[in-house]
Amino acid sequence: MKDLVTIYSNGSQECDRVIALVESMGKTYQVYRLNSHFTQRSFEQEFGERAEYPQIAIGYRHVGSLKETLQHLQAGGELVSHDTKQLAK
Image 1: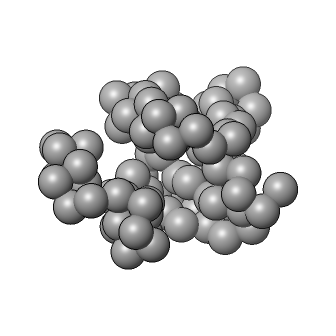
Image 2: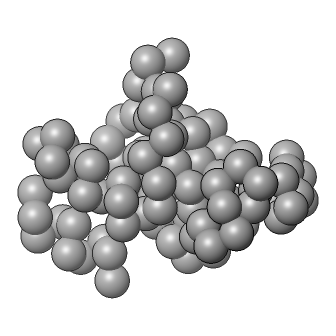
């Protein structure tokens, strides 16, 4: 699916925030959870040792962390700037 949002989550507050955002936007999404679907080691091998949770892909494109995803959505006109500042806190 071109617009499927894939979220790699460790259950943190940031992961919950991106899930809530994606739901509020009406997007189709899939969540992969640490220790259920992947290990910390495989996460680091895929995204790098310094990668933060969550890691998000939209379609076939890896976007990055919550902050990078918010910037991507804002640049694409899907968010307005005050929403980005509020969600990034």
